[in-house]
Every structure is written in structure tokens, then in C-alpha cells.
Amino acid sequence: MKELNELNLPEDLRYTEDHEWATTGGETLKIGVSDYAQDQLGDIVFVEVPEVGDSFDKGDEFGTLESVKAVSELYLPVGGEIVAVNEALEDSPELINEDPYANWIVEIKPADTGELEQLLTVEAYREILKG
Amino acid sequence: MKKEKKTVLHGFHLEKGANMASFGGYDMPLWYSTGVKAEHLAVIQGAGVFDTSHMAVVMVRGDGARELLQRCFTKDLERSVGRGKTPLIIGRCVYGIFLHPDGTVIDDAIVYQLGVKEYMVVVNAGMGPMVADHLLKAVEDDTRVEDLTDRVGKMDIQGIASARILKKIMRDPETLFEGMVYFSFKGGFGSFPTAVTETELLDGTRVLVSRTGYTGEFGFELFVEREQLESLWNQLLVAGEEYGVIPCGLAARDSLRAGAVLPLSHQDIGPWPFLANPWQFALCWNDDQNGFTKDFIGADALLEETDLQYTYAFAGFDPRKISSEASYVTDSGKNKIGTILTCTTDMAIGRQNGQIVSIAENTGDERGKSFTPKGLSCGFVLLEKKCETGEEIYLTDGKRKLKVEIRSDVRPGRTARLPIRTMV
Image 1 (cartoon, one colour):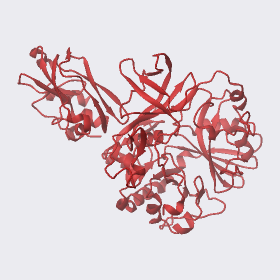
Image 2: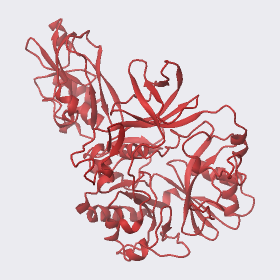
Image 3: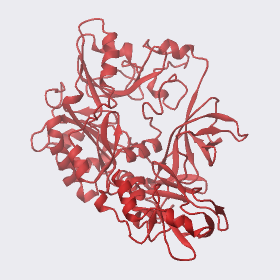
Image 4: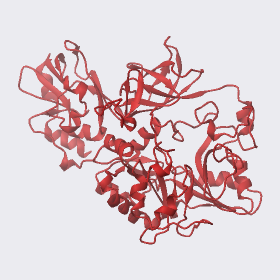
């Protein structure tokens, strides 16, 4: 298990208490899970993603990650429409373990960009991980 | 809150960055930095070592030791060894269950006959006091029952390369491996010698080597004095380096044993009668299958049970699974028919043309060297109705629903029972 100082937590992302991350700044946002989440789950063997065109509210469950032992739900950090899913994860779910930031899960067009501001900064997320 | 116990290898686990979790009152590794998939595959393609010193050891000694076990254990020690159902003898061990009088499970165990009047009973983490108490209540003479858990160091090496690795650290491996059939053992450890054999490491450490294990694969369980465990563990890791041996945690143990259709006590066998399940070999049925060959605590309840619950193994069609919390099983008509006991992923298997194939079998041309399975979900369900092998049932948490198939077997090509001459 990684120590807090071993976790890779990029500064330019925003995070949730459920360990998802979101990009900022563009018309669309990419969504994934944090280094902490992939480390806790262990080897990921299956990623269930929604269909392109599906719409969700902030906090809705939009998919699941399955490791050998556990099943973990994914919650959307910001409401919006799914404009792309990372199809590489269908054949190679382990990519999330290899690099949870390069390997985003879905891309959304946010309904309300104001919701982004409610997400955690890297400093705030780090405080939550400290417990 | 009760403080969790640590095995002597606890420091090693932390140093190796293991993801730790509470199990049976101990702080144990779930997986190491290599990840559970690598650990699972290492056991099938090479070997893995497991810290099992959290398991409990109860010694039963005295004139009435055998009779006591006969009264308390589901296996008939007079008809328990091999296909010929011969009596248990020194150097052999058997798997069975300790039951409450109502036929529900206290724990499963392997009973080793160490001497003429001496038996070692290995049960699960935290179960030493309960099993010792169960035995003591049935004692009718001066037979001694002693929970030695805190004095015993135990670890397992499992996988096809196990014997070749063990050979490198043993003083006399030829004698050790000679005629060593499945569910036999040699040697003794510390102050617990066996009557007939001596088995030592090159450094003189006395070790009990048992050809058993919990993965379905060829391998050994090793018992030494607690203080000697760390040295043995390190010796095996060094000797096993060329065979890709790595330390493995509870998650790999779980996925391997589910694929091997072996039960986890308190999860797959528990507070319901130990009766309609895949582990009939743990009960001493007579030839007519209508009674037992001896009496034991729980026997009457099993024979009188009419409200049956059925435990079945299952396998999915891909790696997807359902969290076992708040989940249940339905039939094709959406009727709720039972609960999920275990749901994990066996990483070594996949389906080809409708058949489950394993990388363990991937040695010939038939399947091609390119077979890289994504794994299949597998585990056990407890159902209110009888099902046939091959029948499809559904695992659901109310939102997600997965189709799985009732199986009599899951991972093919398991190596546990292969002749030892082919493995050394």
C-alpha cells in the first residue's frame, strides 16, 4: 500500500471524496480515479462504462471498477453528458493501475461548469487522505 | 477495540508495501506491490509463498486421542486414507469438519497423525480456543488438548516449482520426496517430533513438510518453531528467485481456492447444516449414502435435516462480478433463490468455444501460446433450491445483474494431485 507521500496527485486536477478526478479548463472534462483509488482496489480486471450520449447528474453512479476482490462504484464529479468513453479500458483495464491519470474513464460535457468549483483542490484532497 | 495480532512476518509485509487488512483477528497482507494478479499467476506458473502462521494448531495427545477425534470430527479416521479408505496412520493427514450438535460448522481442519497417540489439528485463524474447547468438552479420559497456536510458525509454498525450490534448502530432499503422496507429511518441528521421520533444512532447522495446501496446486505447508519462520521464509524466497517465486497475500489465496472449489470457513461453510455442498468428501458416508460409518457430534442433525440449503460453485462468462454485500441470486424468472457466499476472479482462466481453459493447460499446441485469459468470476452461492450443473443463475445487487453457470469444477488442469516424481 502506498504511503501518502508516495501517491501521485497531479496539481492541475480537481478531486472528489470518492477518489475520482476531473480535468478543468476545457469545454469538456475528462474523468478518472486517483492513484489512491487504484492502489486501494488492487489489480483492476473490469471497467464498466456508460454509453456515449448518456446524461447524469453530479454524484450519479456512472460505472463500476472491478478488481479481483472488490467491486467499486464510480460517481460523476460534475453533471453532464458523456461525450466519450475510454475504449482502451475494455481490453486493458489494468491500464488504470499503470497510470490512473493518462487513462481517463469518461469525457463529459458539463451541464454547469460551476460544479467544478465545488470539487476538492489537490491540497484539500490530500488532507482527506490524511484522515 | 481488541488489538489485532501480528504474525512474525508482519514486519516483512509492511516493508514490502503490502496492502493489509484484518483477518481472523490478525493484521494480514491482502496483496503485495506485485499485485494480486501476478501472485495468482505465480502460483500456477511457478510458485508463491504464503504467510499462514495466523492459522491455529491444536495438539491432541493421549490414550483416547483417536477416539476423541472420532467423536468430534466428521471424517472417519478408520476409513479416511486414499481410494481404499484405509485407516489414518502416522505420516498421513485428512481434511474434515468440526460441527456443532445442530450440524452447523465450527471450523474445517486438517488432522495430522504425528504419533501412535498424537495428533496435530490445524484450524483457521482465531479458531484454536473454540476447537480446543469443543474437543475438551468431549474428553472422557486423560487425553490432553493444547492450543499451541502462539508457538508454531507456519507458511505454505504452492505451485508447480515448489518441490524444486524446497529441494535447494533441504538436507536430504530425495528421502523427503520419496513416496510423498497428496495429503502425506514428513518430519516434525521444534519440540513436536513425529515418530518415524526426521526432516531438516540444510542449516539444521527441523521442519514438518506436508504435501497439502489451499490453492488446488501442487505444493507444501511447512511448520517450524515460531522463531525459525522468518529464516525459512527468506531461504525460500532466495531459493525460489530463479522460478519467479513471490510472496502472496490473502486475495490470491482467495481467488486460487475459489477456482479450486475449496471452501473458506465462516464464508462458504458456516451457520447452516454442513450437508448439501460440494465437500461430501469431508463426511464419512457409508456405501449406500444413507448414513455415516461412525457417530460424531452433528451426525444426527445432518441425517435428520429435511430443510436443505444447497451450496454450489459457479463460474461467470467474463471477469465481471457482484459485490457480495447486499447481493442475492435469482433464477431466470427473477425469483430470489439464495445468497452469494464468495465472488472473486480466477485470473488464470478464460472461455474458449464454451469451455473453460486455464493457462495451466497451455502447454500444448492446441490452445496456442497466445492464450492470455482475462479471468472469470467464480465463487459459491447458497441456494434454497436444487440446481443442476450447467444451470444458469443470476447474481445481482438490485442494479447490476450477471449471468453465471453452476459448475462442479472451475479451474481445469490443477496440479495438487500430480505424482511427485513429475514435480521434482
